[in-house]
Length: 278
Image 1: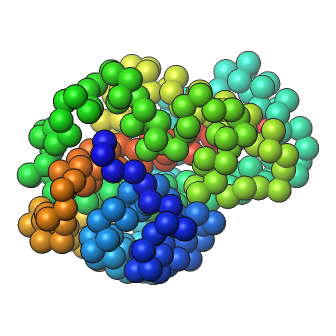
Image 2: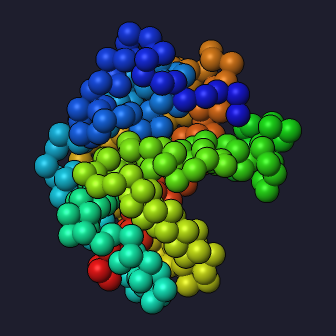
């Protein structure tokens, strides 16, 4: 990809103002990476954030979020339970009751935020997919499936710096799991196990079938979003088509963002299931 996420300190004033609103609305110390990428398209970011914020302020959206996260948990719990070795590993990492409480609290928060983002980005995907899905808008020399180039893009989007240590892994996820009041080593080790379990789960045949079921459910729920997040191709184009990397924006909205949002929600729910074994 040609674009990089824009950090808050380097953002233009209008984007910084939107970033501040995002952190306040989501109650996060850092702007999620989705919006840092969208900051490359300032007009679109400001436009779409107003739509998203309207839902976040609506109690019916909060109710929908609770229903979706509960469905997600119950369905993953059917196909995933940590084995004895993993359960023992978690008990060895989170020894103190205070550590367990802090992680459980943050995992619950991450599930809520990730569910909100899943509903949001699936809705955006559905709005633009008639034009963008199935069209590989990033040239093949820059993004090929299974190549090192693709792996680096995925690492970047998931906020896991390739080759970095556990402390960096914990710091990289502070936008979705607020840094808790426990030792960094315990927190980072828990995150490592959580993501290892998530990657393992995604390779299982049972997960592939369940994912289809969950996807159908989620697509049905986006129609329950109280305030429609209208972002058709023509609307996106009117705000960003003049940008030289407009095609990358379409790719993010129609492919990368929905995939990443679901991955994060899955990881958070896996973490909650793991914690239930304590």
